[in-house]
Image 1 (tube, rainbow, N blue to C red):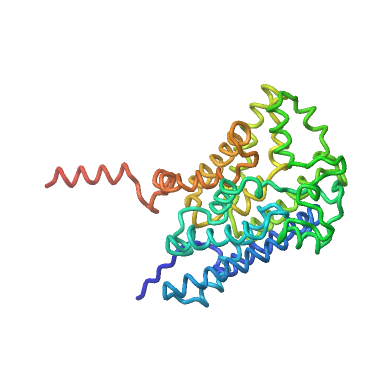
Image 2: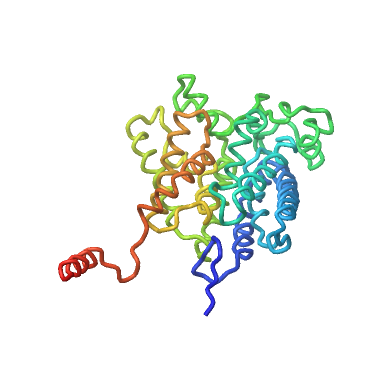
Length: 365
């Protein structure tokens, strides 16, 4: 009898790695569609750039390593990494940011450790952290929703901005980022953090144009709900389990509720934290990476809840408003310890009974 062992990801549902990766990518479609609707075509352009660079980089490195290029490319893991990185990058970021990030994710975070199944960190989030630390200006160039933008943004304008940093009419990135009031707009998390740092209350912060309701919800809320839809499909199809998403969202809700009840003027509500950034997308599509997450169900709950805790800490007292990438990378480092202490017992194993039998055998001898 032959025994075959393969690297993660492993699933109880019989699916190939390529099928899993494609299902995850397919479930991001509602969220990407919402991002494109509210913030323009930049997201799709960065997705195209990132996917191209990721596949070419993976092929070149596999050729250097004398590995089967076709099998590795067909598993779609490089495409998924590129997709998750691209949707996290601001639509107006220059093209070279996406190129550097995609190359770093595949070459350094993934292939340097041996390829799929061996990387210690989530490739997309590790690359995002590297980009944010290295190019903070470019990585915070988020656009206002199309309904609030001062300048119309056509497809050709976005392409021109990404590759030249100027629109076809000659408007700069700063001008294209201006809202209807003429002021450069930030994300809701950025706006709240800046307002609180200037001793304003949350009520004053929420009066900004960023929180304008469109069809009943803030644009960022619509994006979060769209990713939630895709995440629920992943759960229904058993591509992921509930342990990490629920514990991650629950961990954030618990700590946010405590501080909100203590001081509602200076700490945002749990609902705001859930739908104003990439929390929902991160809970279903990022933290659930089977390679870099904890492996046992108990470990996944600890892993997810800890990410939620770190997100809240960094958002409120750190230098970066969203914090998903930092929280995930921090907990990736803790996975070996979590797995060690949450390792499930082997079936039929009784520690006390085994200890008693050993003592009896020792006494007989």
